[in-house]
Image 1 (cartoon, rainbow, N blue to C red):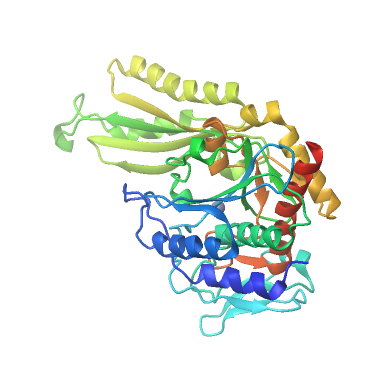
Image 2: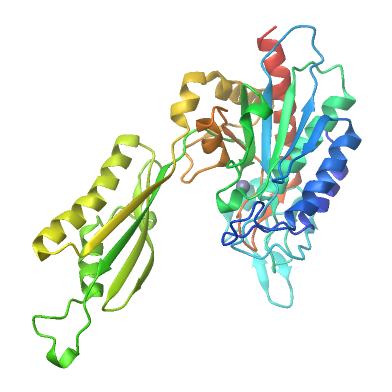
Length: 413
Ligand SMILES: [Zn+2]
């Protein structure tokens, strides 16, 4: 029912516009180039017949598909982000289309011998006989999250062209700067005015997520004292050696490379130091709120005990919360997940419900009063040159959006 050629063209149109965001620019949006896609989307949404299309001063685009029912049902929303990750270049994306994929190696770049192979990425084998869109090996693709944008626009267009499909009021929003953690910051939840929403920002077909990490950062500053090393006895304090002790006191098995599923971790991601001062930067992650709090406490406790032993306040710990597990906000309205799950089953999609080992815009939105689980957008290998998306998965995700719209109208009739 969804036109394959059209959805492919729409996606390629979006990914060839560079919208890389910038973690080092506090401006909003963080890069001017995000406006280029935002303006195209604004125009396109008007063209397909959406109402109240509005691109605001912070580069958020909202629009409405009015209800075609004669009774009232909850207003629901769909959200995707327009920026791409600064981890890898998003400039000059030259997508390649592989039709009727046979499970073989795909040469992305002949010259540089960049190969996308099922030996490295066995999920490719899920998509035999399908149409894959890949990169040319020199950039990311931007299926994260332009696949989500494509699916939402395509679903809205389909609903407009098929008024026989009954649905309530639907709100959509495209946000900037998700990849630099700011996508939800200036999201006007009141103006959006939906009872709940879904981010279309997951990966593999079937993914449905409503649990994510609780997250904090910890900055450990250790002050030392430099003295001529020949005459340092009893005087020099080497902050790097104290840092080494601190690092050793943090549980060594609770790190990203040794954890999965619901296991949390401490992740030392930056270390800079000399004798005078060493700074350690950690992130702390856990799905369980109590365990998360205990992890933060442990970071403080190690410093407290070491300071006591040193007889001086040399170690200073600064902890900042980053985001929280949306489960707390979604479980009380669990039917919003159940509806999505039912729709997937109706469409012969196997729901993959699992905890996210990270955060989404949806977790911040959930805490701002808009419960917001995450649904697959279809892409794989985000943030790098091996990113790809099967067109069939984008079509399925589009059908999930249409199906949810329909199901809400049915349930509340
Ligand atoms: Zn994303």
